[in-house]
Picture 1 (cartoon, helix red, strand yellow):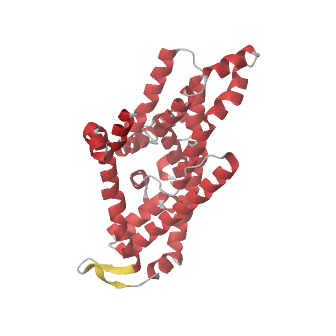
Picture 2 (cartoon, helix red, strand yellow):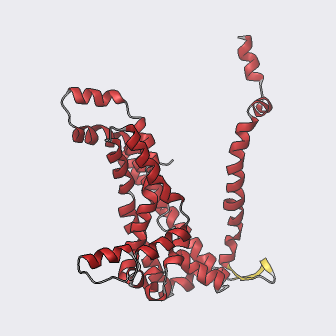
Amino acid sequence: MKALEIKQKRGFSYFLKRDWMLYLIIAIPIIHTFIFKYCPMGGIVIAFKQFNPMVGIFKSDWVGLKYFKQFLNDSTFWNVFRNTILLSLYNLLWSTPMPIIFALTLNEVRSTRFKKSIQTISYLPYFVSTVVMVGIIFQVLSPTTGIVNHILRFFNIEPIMFMGESKWFRTVYITSGIWQGTGYSAIMYFAALTNIDQELYEAAQIDGAGRWSRMVHITIPGIMPIIAVMLLLNIGNILQLSFEKVILMQKPITIDVAEVINSYVYKRGLVGMDYSYGTAVGLLQSVISFTLLVVANKASKKLSETSLW
């Protein structure tokens, strides 16, 4: 009883002194998030002002919704918005199930050494920088020296200008993204698979259930919560396409399908020095993404009782 009273009297300073290393580890990402995510949010006011760098944010003239109306009436913006939505939806449609399929397939492998080797190899593309990856794409898909077109020639098929034709841009973007991110994205599913009670598999096997039946009735339901959470996070980032990758893959001939919101904001806001307009477009993008996340979270909570909050 006395020990309990002593424990209750211990304040935050005691635990801070005892576990200071753990608090330090937690403090680093919190400080980073606060400085680079929350502090810049004060600059949102630029979207409602005719920002003049010479006088600063607060002394610039207030124009209200001028720039929002401007880009809503801009035909270029709507083409950019359409490109972003289509590329994001295709990416969500193809990229979301691939890590799940990969994790389920590898989970059926009995050789531990082979499984770990495949896992390690699948992680490697994720750590390749975007610049290097796009360079690899251009080399592999080159119409003259690329291995893909060499294979096409072997089957008497004419070389294809993958990076020079608009109709191939989305395919190349999504396929390269799957190659780079599938292994790393599957980590969450591998972790979820290890938490499934192995006694369920043993009981199902005794009852005569095959591998396919065990996967359908035990494995997939066991990882369904993490699938729902990852899907919600992907929906929240549906408009946040890789800016560096899009910029590096763009060519003047493919700009009609390759221009997305992120690259448009960069060119109009930073390169064109139209800061207020670029901020307004970026703010609208964030509002749409947040709205989609809230709606998807509410739908997920109602349908599967799994949600982010």
